[in-house]
Amino acid sequence: MQELLNFVVKRIANHPDAIDIHTKEDPDNGTTIFQISSHSEDIALIIGKKGKVIKSIRNLLNVIALPKGIHVQLNVEEKESPESD
Image (cartoon, rainbow, N blue to C red):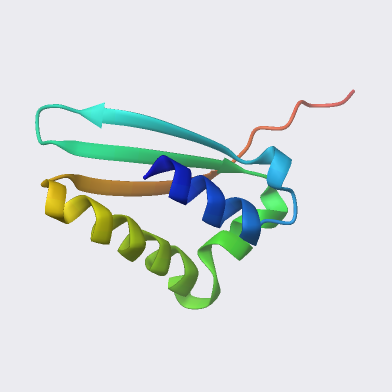
């Protein structure tokens, strides 16, 4: 699933090298949490108008996860940039 997510998100972004995807498993409720860290300019592209793009990405992940009995959560955050003085 992470390979698919990586493929899709990097094709959408203007700064694909700035994309980081971290995965965390929550064994208590069987949830896999994907955290996308992205350049600030790419956040709007990943979310899309009215959230349509991120919803479609979540749907793709759910198509793979549900038959396996896995719950998926997808979060997007702005990547912290090093502050310049």
